[in-house]
Length: 174
Image 1: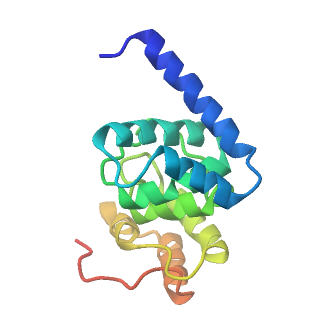
Image 2: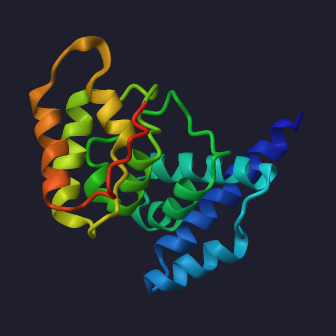
């Protein structure tokens, strides 16, 4: 187990990384910087560090860093995002790429995200993301939880499908 000083040093390091990325002049430059620090595929140790970096980026609402980490959310199954973190309803406007990755991987399930919040995110994303960017399997399963029908969420999912913003649906919803 790490000492308290190591944890504080890591927090400062991550904060400085987030500030560096925030002030980079181009999106490609910031992506290249993060890709250099965290090469894919992530080892378990690097996945733990990436999880902590993403948690900090969410807390700081650092759009640039969240956009840089979106690909890791999609490609790494070892990430553990903080279940106690309050995610902003503005996540879809703060960082559309990250929000799309977060929804596609189903990280909202068990993270205290309400159906209304997911509805808001999907309605926002449908106007700002590229075609075939979302995977809706987890969203569809989530919309059917508790037997309570949420017509707004169902309409948002249908809108995403209709606008072709999601990948083709698979038969593997369950």
